[in-house]
Length: 293
Image 1 (cartoon, helix red, strand yellow):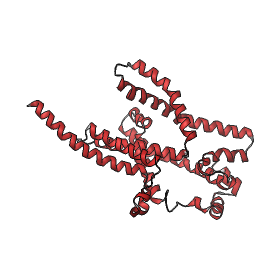
Image 2: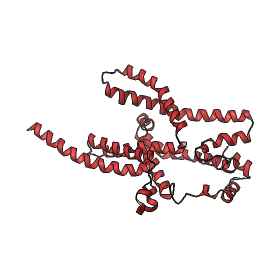
Image 3: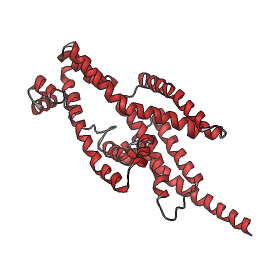
């Protein structure tokens, strides 16, 4: 699809970009405000440092045969992203051929351009392939989400819950989580990519506590880690829900004010983590000393 559509609709990949540059040049450049260059750079950084913070990805680390396997995968896996280039070609091909795709409607680019170019049987094949593609990561996300809710939330509240009960609850929660996710996806004004980036902004708040845990003499306390994560998540939620732009609040920042909210929250997370950890560590050490005395 990524190779066929540019040649079928425009005569080639270069010709496709030339026509887009002539008729819709805004699609080939980053805007001066909003999703500008600083936003793009900070978003790439956010997704890079937050990749292994996703529970379904982080958990897969433990299945590695040894540390060498994990390192090799970390080197090779980025090559998978090259496949995304062809998805971009499909999206660019739809810009002029399906001009009605605006805003979140852009998520329908593949389907709409397929309906225009192919017979129904081919459209069905493309839809089936898309469904299978979504099921693989989707099933992992659903299972991990249900397991986290049952084991890390419900069992904390009800510690007497057995492993068997946790397993049954996790199975029950899979369709529930799927339904909730579907409702949010359908009703949200954000497109799928922005929803994914919002998820990255949330899970990356786990990064500081994880990195500090690798230190030989880790000074971070559970109160500091928890406070940092809470503040980071709260900042992401507030800035997203209120649609607050740092550029508007702090005009002197200029284009730097377009930095991804996840990075802004991460910096606040680190500050709170350090301050609260130092404060609670001092009280904890004093308490332990008093008990020994």
